[in-house]
Length: 496
Image (cartoon, rainbow, N blue to C red; front, side, top):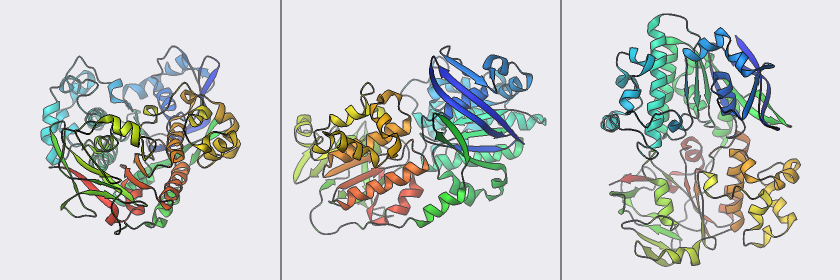
């Protein structure tokens, strides 16, 4: 049975979320897609009853949130449920060990919480789990992916308790971008565990994500679950938001239609060559490939190449990218770029004076790392030292490649801090594209994007490649990029 909600969230005079008829199927699983920052997290928090920011005013179904949350059925939904935060540090207590937090409160009734949480670690990772259980969580330890799995495991504990009680519970379980820090294998273990616990204990599950590749995994590995899963997408609708059904077939047919458009060049010297054996943070890293080869090799990229570097989460892909672009010092590395040999003793000023923005640039996976949040969208483009950004017409033309024409005048004047996560990511990409350097690193370029934006970004990347730009791409969206990029242009980063 679908329950429908009208949800309004505001801060002073600024309306943050206004969605009518948001439907949630009780006792079933809803996958909610949409670009980051559009309001999915606020909706999840409003439904669960954790909007504790005194500056926010919340109305649900026309009544003040406090009155709504006081209703017995809403209180029971929260008591028997669990909220998995997008940023796990928001929930984990730095004054208690992870092991203690897994056993506190009503979770203490779970027979073996380590067993439940352990299902999110592979057999070869169980030693890592044992290592972090006695840890008091901090900003940098354990890793983001490990914290995320601990919090997911606590939600699974709660679901297991509901199943063992034999009662029909009304618990609401909200998973807010639970796989953002997970590699593909860990994501698959999460989905396997989620469906397994759902079958045993039911409950209502709202899974907020922008990982559309989940659709293919459900269809392939859990086809019997599709009758219990609803796919919805949150979209902008004027000043408000609307909820639309998302057809899995649209994504699957689009993915099936992708064909590799590039082949790795074999003639001419590489634009970039990075030797295996680089060392940083006490680890020695190397490259296998191209393709499925397990042979040690150099990472090589020529002009017009689109090369995909993949690895498990936390293996060091972003670190390697920052070493290449001169933002991270390695203990040892050897690289040739455009005929110049560079290494750990090369002066950082060389990158700053000769390479940054002139011959190479990088799109960071978190747009806030690269954008001035106090500037307007137009100012963030005008500051770039290229002719195309120096006129209003040129800036609007750049924006039009990834934004709708009708929104451009208001968008150009908007402060960057007011953009959604998906809008920031598109602006982040456009700034890098506008520089037109000979080499470009894209670190999680599809991060925070909805399906429509993903298709436009992929088209823009292909245009850059056709213009001769060498591109190194890092992403956990393996379904998409393994379909787009042939094996001979794919490398794997490994710890040696």
